Amino acid sequence: MIKGLRSTFVFYLLMGYIFIALVWWMLLLLKISNESYAEKRDLLELNYQLRHLSQDDFAQSAELTQIDKERKRKTYMIFGEGSFFLAVLMLMTWVMHRSLRREADVANQQKNFLLSITHELRSPIASSKIAIQTLGKHRDLPAEKKEMLLNNSLHDMDRLQGLVENLLLAAKIEDHSFSLRTEACNLSEIADVVIQKLRETTAMHQHFEMDVQPEVVVKGDRMALTSVVTNLVENAVKYSPEGSTITIGLSADKEVATLSVSDNGPGIPEEEKKKIFRKFYRIGHEETRKTKGTGLGLYIVQRILALHHGRVNIKDNRPRGSVFEVTLPVGF
Image (tube, rainbow, N blue to C red):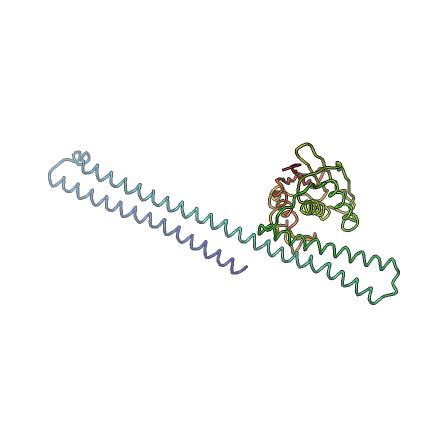
């Protein structure tokens, strides 16, 4: 981080030096040009005086007109070349500024990702370890307690499996090794299965409201579409307060299927709506964040939908929260 700041400081210092040198060069050339003009004008005027010609003859002479034209030409040339080099310098500075800023953003996102992935991996492993140790030390636990510990461990393993699957899927998408296995997919059935699974595991503190049109069939990759629905609903669960309602809607016409996931969370600021689909991007800083996640879910959603010729849009929910709306062609 300090090395990056030092490099940035040196770059801007160098650009500042070049800018000052360029301005100084322009002023110096103008000074030399003006001095040369004044010298030629004085010599010409002296020549006219020695020939006993009037001041009017001197002022209207072709030689003076030629000297004036040459002066103007040199002045225009100096300003033209100087302006061109200044424009190039400003463009280079702007391009480098954007590049440095993008590099800093990527470094920050990678740092956040490492912090989040460390927590996401450590948490279910530690929880399962504690459950196993408890079962090993206290074999006389009541059956209800044992079942609760086992269910919690299974929940943690499911969460860990989902994380690993997202990591592998993101890696395949990134290096273009992921290929769709298209078939007729019942999107209504996929949504029902995903919601039922989340009801049993992660979404114990939220309520689901389903408005799903039956038998909505699209052409696509079943595993990939399941990942889209799972990531969108898990995202809503993650940011919704306890006791709130998450609404899942699904409808279709002859051409397009529309899936919507609405939550009552804090919502997404307008300036963040395009950024949240970037890989590893999460709003805020990982060291102070309270919500779980790696910044891969929405990235995967957008990339998978692009492969299916679909898209995802974000709208503001009323009175608060967000609505993620997915549109998919029924056939392609």
